[in-house]
Length: 304
Image 1 (cartoon, rainbow, N blue to C red):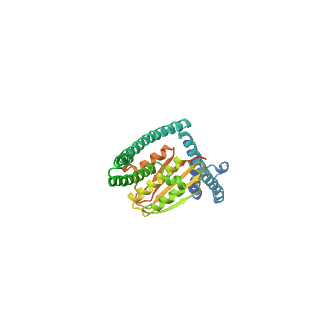
Image 2: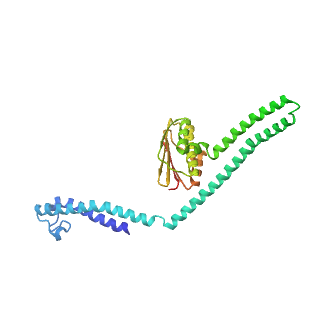
């Protein structure tokens, strides 16, 4: 209905302006008594003076109305359409709940898989080494008075295995919560990450304040995965990382100058980023046109 009404108003104004522009120069060729669109209470066009004066005035008025009304009506029509077609608060809430339910399910699945991976790493790696160390130490205790040379060899092997077990344990811990985050904070951890990157990386880190540990970990792993993807798949020579905080939102942007065309269905890197971020009710946007550049934008809630 609004489209019809607004359209008629626009046609009336623009149509009269166009009709006046055509009629005034040709008034002499029209049948006697023809009026310039009924302008000025229907004054007839009887001469060039009347045609030019009243016709020009009518054209200016309708042209001005068209210039002023068309944008105004277009904006008003757009607002009405948005108000009528946008989902209601109840529908938006339902969509939000559905999104959160899906993200929580994905997060639970990812969390379960991560726990199984950690358990497997500890069981097959660190635990196996600790069992071997305990066996060597037990055998060394039994041979302590009988074969000192064998005891010395067993103790040396146990010492080496202990160091290897500690190294493996550090690797497992690093996948849960990188120690560099606890030691240096997010800014320091990202600086170390940029230094270790396989391609040239520039960092722009604002004043982040205090950030929850879970958010720090997700931000760190997100940037680490993005830099790894850029180095492995994008043929990029440079990456830029920007991290800023705006109130209770943490903004992360990673851009590379690679070939673009990133597709999260072809691997687990981007999907892993999305799962981590959605688990904290964050958002992920990926812009990667063919030919590049690729930009990954993440928003995370980090408290006020």
